Image 1 (cartoon, rainbow, N blue to C red):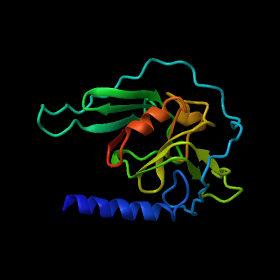
Image 2: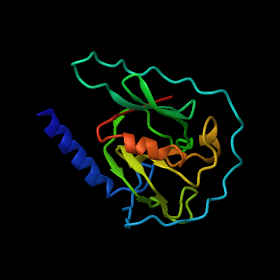
Image 3: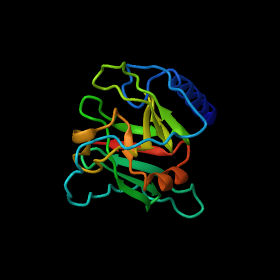
Length: 201
């Protein structure tokens, strides 16, 4: 019964996603278009890279279950204060990477979420009108994973220059979690629909 309920929720969320704007503001929304192949583009002019800071401390993963019981919990943990992401299967670290999350005006939501859908490639279209300080031209990501209603994604961001601590203050996203192009393929290929996404301050 729970699976049907969860499947129904996922279907509803995915269908509502098509009506909302891209990557961030849950109160704004224009439909996002799609295309069969990514479009190459030159990197945007961003701020200079953030200075090197101490290596982030990984959060504790959920303990693995004993042999013969349920499989290990699969989870993606994102620490906003550290601008870092860890992916765990049980207590085994799968991916660890700096990220860039939402700018202060359009923050990444905190809480316990799940991967709702995966797309490869995915075209982001601004929900904000031209002239808005938050407007952006359409952008392609190779891999994108929807994790919260309101069009919050974990996705690669070839245009992002400021990963790691302070990156969200220099060139933060519209609420999505920007992942370096070098780390996203491993994360995307490992992750499955339904995996936990835990976002903390």
